[in-house]
Image 1 (spheres, rainbow, N blue to C red):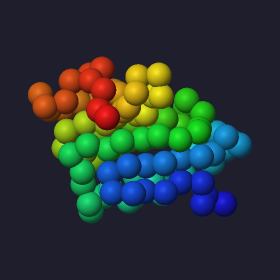
Image 2 (cartoon, rainbow, N blue to C red):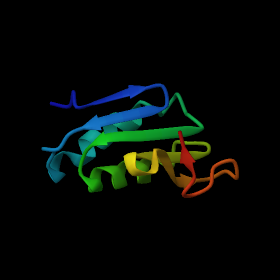
Image 3 (cartoon, rainbow, N blue to C red):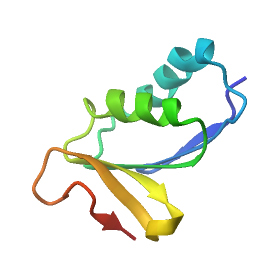
Image 4 (cartoon, one colour):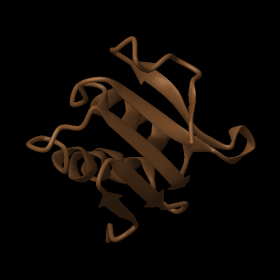
Length: 96
């Protein structure tokens, strides 16, 4: 069922408009498992998905990154840092 996401390096691309909340935990587990043993300093998330999926991913992935999480925003022209544990990345910083 979940061929609706892919991980490319430190980027997660999700395209899953028809997911139900019942599937949330399973999908988030699949995605976060990609980073359990290959931790990244920065994880970037983009795609077409419900806001609650983005929030869950950001929350759970925040335990698996060394520095920051950013989500794509076309109006900002790049990835906006939404979680940071390092002074190199500031909340609200746009990464192009």
